[in-house]
Length: 438
Figure 1 (tube, rainbow, N blue to C red):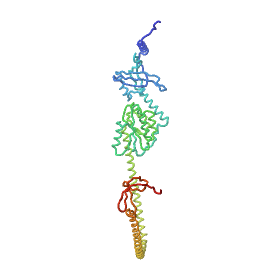
Figure 2: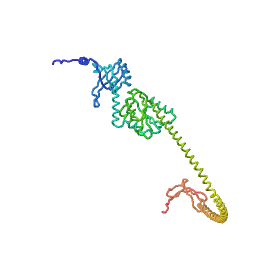
Figure 3: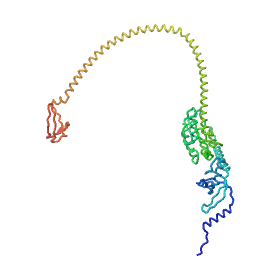
């Protein structure tokens, strides 16, 4: 059998590399989404680029690399232009050369990046989110939620370690008003920020009657750090939240979608706290004005009523002068009659009490005599029932082992018994036992 013609794997890979380099010798611009990004210890940036289709699986995927010498310039350039670090989930436009390696296969070597494409994609997604909320009729819902006159019970969504949260709390503490705040902890940036923020809002909504307002605060950050606040799910929750929402997310430039749908938004957490303090100061001023109006009206009413009382008093004095004299004469006559009737009544009562006192003494003496006789009879009956009196009638106490015997059935032949008489004691031995009735 003749030997088949063949080539080695290296020869095949080399041929493929040569053909590929001949087919696409020049760099070209490619649009893709960053699926993964890692910078190794040598400073080279390795990426996985994908193009997504309608389903969950990507339509295309390729590895890419930005060598250290290029990455050192591209990274700050992209961050400065977009306000965000290059990361997973971003759509990018890159200038790349096709590379094929015998061990690592096909990849793209990136030499340049266009940040305006990424900015345009981010803005496009942001505008799509705003349009979707408007189409669903929820974009303005939170702005239609009324603000209470006094906002002292504050639900705070933030990270406890965030500088923005500390600034917010310090500003409230420095004011002359008392606020009741409760922190609903959430992750404020990164992959888990969206779900964490929504979970915090849902916990507040379950206790909405306990709060006057909800605030979302965090310090400044890059646009990618704040990407969660442009998400549709979070913005939809904020827009439809049952309490008024105030945001202080630390944007230096444009507002996030969460800012746009919130009841009111501020650039910094400190500004949110200042707004809350100003609200209480305004309400306090309103109370002062109201107090002044009430005081003025009360003084006017009192003056009017005081004049009316003085007039009534003069008229009353004239009317009651003669009537008072008539009543005084009648009272003197009634007082004389009352003294005479009182003396007669006291005499009659005293006589009756004397008679009752004599009767009571006689009845008490008779009762005590009868009770004494009954006590003598009871004492005599008690004396006749003492152990000594019963023994003197011829009875005896029989004990076995120091215990009184009351039933012959409990004895056995040969038991020794102690017998106590009215006078003296004796020892006996059981010879015969007869039960009662036999």
